[in-house]
Length: 345
Ligand code: SAM
Image (cartoon, rainbow, N blue to C red):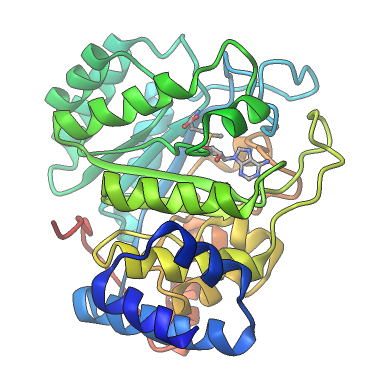
């Protein structure tokens, strides 16, 4: 099995059967070996630098009804909010003072954020903070809309593919949502020139090893500049309330495989990982991740962006605690850098 890991770290590619073997045959010793290879690869390209992104959750209103998500349309118990343009700009300003040079605008698919509004917002952020990158994560839009945002100055776009298998996608989403459309969106983003991010939940309901292998092969082929993976965590007011959550152990193992498949990828240790393990962020970094996305949203709305139960939004997860996060990273031999942290292409 170590030979497979050596092959992966040398060629950045394994075939379907090899990936399945690597996943199903994992144990602690192999994981340690894999993490070491992942760290070596990551150090070769990004050294010991960690990029931070200020995450602004602009709205929890959503027209979609993804079965796993706490802010799905049908969850009538969710208390809805949307930030005003001024509130978003205030978050950017606070984040800039703290040292953030990337702002991630994430939200549900909220149609009250019209394209005109989003374009005006991007322009304003870029004008006020010209040395900052803007990342959007606001779901599926038309090619024309993505183009307008890009021309207004947006640099990056995160849209997890959720699963590369259409039948599995249909088990996680209502019939009105389409796997083909999600994939079309990703192709549009890439063609337009965004640094494009995709990803999936580890341990999502009904996920098999074959599904994960398909996800990995899809990403190896699509070559996203960013990949976001984190454990699935059930939300009590969704149809998946009783489903088991994903594990830290498998998430870390897959982070390391992804680092070796896509050596230059920007790979966050996600909030979901930090939520199910107090040392999740550090463990993620030691498995090959190189990005952390602390929360910059106003305190008053943080508890409302509850996409899964017990989602962290305070302590090290919070942008105000950047100094503590710096110390935590220094204690494991890494340093947070004040830069846009673009992908190496
Ligand atoms: N609406 C945008 C979209 O669909 O891309 C962005 C917001 S969406 C809430 C961001 C991500 O949260 C999703 O891509 C999904 O993978 C993740 N997510 C949603 N519910 C989750 C859960 N219960 N556990 C873990 N991650 C979850």
